Amino acid sequence: MRLPRSAHTEQPWRIHEFTRDFRIEDVWSFRTPGAGPDDFPVMLTALRVAYDTVKEPAVVRFLFAVRWKLGALLGWDTPKAGLGGRVSTLRDRLPYDLARTTEGAAPCSDPFTEVYLLDREAARELANKTVHDIMHLGWVPVGDGEYELRMAALVKPNGWFGRLYMALIAPFRYLIVYPALTRQWERAWRDRALMRPAPRSGLSRPPLPHGPRDSSPASG
Image 1 (cartoon, helix red, strand yellow):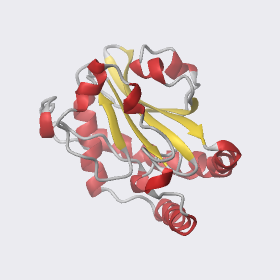
Image 2: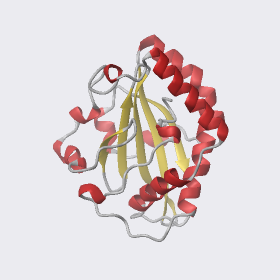
Image 3: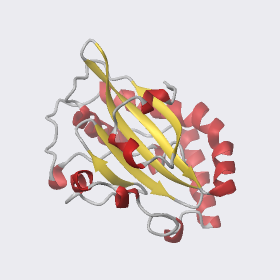
């Protein structure tokens, strides 16, 4: 379900400290019935399992196939257009206590880079020729002791080209990508296996989830 931007800004997230030059593009909630305050690692693990076993609808696969083909033809996703090329990584802004949360973590195998990972909050980033994008995940109380997952997409478009691109893909995000993502992530919680939260250190920590086709719902 789509939420107002205030659903993100009113939470005491650490992400607010160093993303004032990013705009909030989308805020979305995902129902997790029965979830408690310590289940954020369980949800992240469930999302990872779902990504490995659940296929996206054909229309979503088609949209992202077109996006990656265009990116390859037009050079949108080259190293020079990404983190450490066109833009600096958000990790350069982190205070020490956040930067150390990803020490020893395995490198991500998709376009996202892990920024930090806390008990109830996490962030990843990607950058290309169109946008610098932050995917923020938070674990939020919703009453009666239960919690839900919220995702905020924070973006910094690359000039007029990036703003135009974001405007053009908006209908696809809201009509196709986000509904598919919602079904997949909420099903991941319902179908989660009984598990202990993974340890919060080293390589055994649960990796953050991917969006459909390894791409941010906001940036494509």
